[in-house]
Image (cartoon, rainbow, N blue to C red; front, side, top):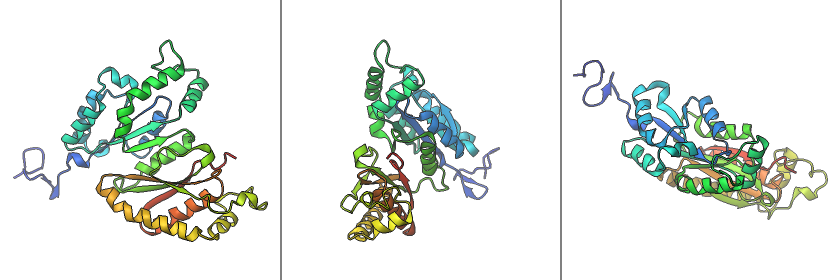
Length: 308
């Protein structure tokens, strides 16, 4: 017999269907460095249907999650954005996350990061001081904040390095991660990059395509990119290219079920060449296509394309 006014029986059945549980509430916790792009991430999450709460004190995270669960509907997809101001109330993010999990929620933590030099340029461009620099330099405030957020970064399910992303690229990345119908499915980003610009810090696998001949030294290909047929055919037609792509497609395919069992939802496979324009781009596009053919949710992104 149903409880009065709820339509739910003591077995958790509503209208013949199992009643929603806390685990059915999608919670995203967004934190990271000031100037890293938290506001852009928040807006992108709103674009894909999340109810976003900005500058929420960590001590109120469980209360907010409970409200989202009880409200149902659109509130079942809630994002909580935390920054250094939130730490005025509590510094125990680890404890707050643990409380959520003990209550039955499955929060996913997104950490937004960027190189110090990039953060400094961003603050200087808008003529703002860092919230923690006090009477010191911008670099001092950033260093203090990195120390405070070290544990949060270690706990993150997703780390997004925005050093080389513009606003639109960051928004696209968030929408790809959280906008699909099945957000709990493992998603693979195949990211091309140039070694001369540094390794992507969020890479799970790093592939080196520099063993292939460089189209840069072919005059008719130099000004083109790996997304164009002429360059792609040249790169993929080289000795070893087919085996390279096939081997890594098999490797990623062999590990995905294990990653999913361990609760990993986002996998970044970084493919590098010298400048991130020709070889790595062609290989990334081909590898992402192979992974999609095998049934994985995969997309190709190109961090350094256009920098040369």
